[in-house]
Length: 322
Length: 192
Image 1 (spheres, each protein chain N blue to C red):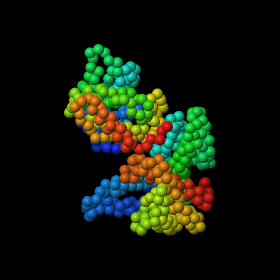
Image 2: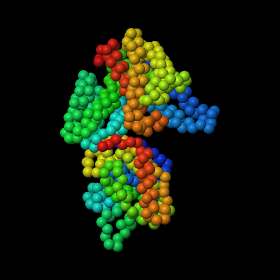
Image 3: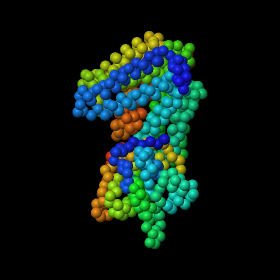
């Protein structure tokens, strides 16, 4: 057991290990705050903060273990994330009684997509959900015979499977990028960088919003979001991406600049788009799976938008594999 | 695979004699209810289930009595027989009795008229609190008549326990009102 662990760590690239250490350090500060605040400023309810920090630790430990253990573990972990996110989405979205078995068919996209990751069939992956699943699902719904609310339900299935399965499944593909194609920090480094900057963007937009936020940016969709938070987070995350990209990715300065410019915007877009859906459905969180955070889908909403952007910028400008 | 959001888990009775009254739409209800109890209390939970349905086939019977631990109740009454005897025995043994007062699964997420057997039990055991529970979404996972379960998130809402009111009519009205109130707290179920 210790041997396996030692070997896995020895195989992991230095930037990834340093990155994980850095994230742990940041979280340690958060943990200290969660422990000290109730002592320094008693009287307020800190249970949400405590739950949040505790959940962050579990997520970080799981992700770090998967990053160190290799792309197979990453694929299994993200298959689980895709399934849970899709389940939350399909449970909340309006559906019709006749479509129970079509919903079961929608879940099939998870094993199929991740099997294609294991088989390294990237070209087939690209068309499986957006083309074949996209066409077969409405046909199966037709067999069910119910035409009421037909088009809206088709859209529900497509939206759920593309965001929760297809977009997130790109991550394990990145994780299995061979070392020669990403010599800086390997495939794990590519995935780490995406997860880190996506979450950093979420957190920085939140912090800037709390510090100086005044003007609401989307009052009808997400009343807590402000222009100041959005712009402050954008600038900070862009700088973070531009200066850290050479450490983790093979991106040259121009494409790194492009990523720096667009990724914070994509993260924001994913966040507010999912907020719009939740508002439409009349819920605040997609479930209570992650204590203090809400559902899995609440946690990965920005990632469903940043993952394809990041993947395709890398594939177009830097990676020979994809 | 299905998973449920539980609201008010701390209101569940952990020791008997106690009665849990829940709405009923699916076989999944029983499993969901069992799963929300802490492991220590789970062995004391005894769901009341129809003998004519669960005890006719030996496989189902083994599953129902050995694994789930049901208290069988006969739906066809023989003369002079107390149909509630197994339920009373469970309460005498200090167990937590789960009752679906609708008596059958019915159509998803609609409450059928409540049967009064629960009131007779509450009257006979006034020391046993009756905790109302609303289970939402199980009717989508496995509705009556369906064979294949489909994983969907469910919601289990536990209400404040209610005590015996003194007469059956007011007790049943109170129980129904509590269940309706829990139903209104549940997240919207867009299922049509």
